[in-house]
Length: 234
Ligand code: SF4
Image 1 (cartoon, rainbow, N blue to C red):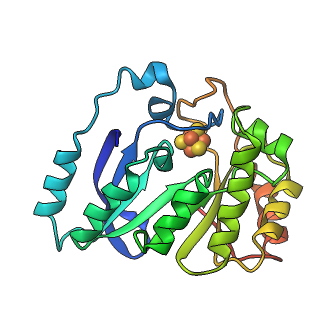
Image 2 (cartoon, rainbow, N blue to C red):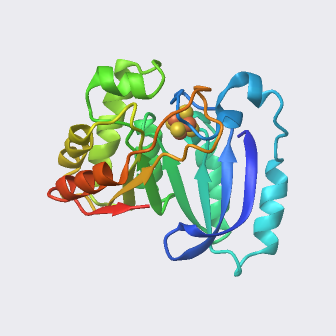
């Protein structure tokens, strides 16, 4: 597995636990507003210094008991076929594992859930479940197969066999109030739906400027989406 970053301490990324964060390299999407171009764009990945897997396991070994959980994010972690093996080793050390994913690798996600290798899943829903709109939001690389997998991943989490959250980053250029309400309807009855507003102060994959939602629109979104699912702003 290729790892491009390792944050040794976080108090906010795993619900209720002290965690560390592993950032995997590479992604099958190109969301133009993505905050981590260094983990997504091949020309930037080339300049990135990989974190040796051994270094992470050495840290985990030394910090057992202090640190309780490992959050795996990216990039898109599930593009790495050896992710389950990596997680198996982490779990064997007694850590809880959270996985952040875009849901395109349904088969791997399902296996991870069924094998109880992950304890918490954070599924990033990019837009309402309309192929054209979704494709635009992920940079024009969406395939029918990926799209079907995303829908299946949402359904899997809604079955409630594992702790999870849904989330969406709100960007004015890609989302209208109705789009987010449509997402809320699609995850009706789900445990929790986090909405995070776009941060305009960072370099993004698309190399352009994008706009966060204004406060009034945000409030309207939260009010309308809350008719279907518990919505929390981040
Ligand atoms: S925001 Fe999009 S491009 Fe960036 S890591 Fe997530 S899925 Fe990949």
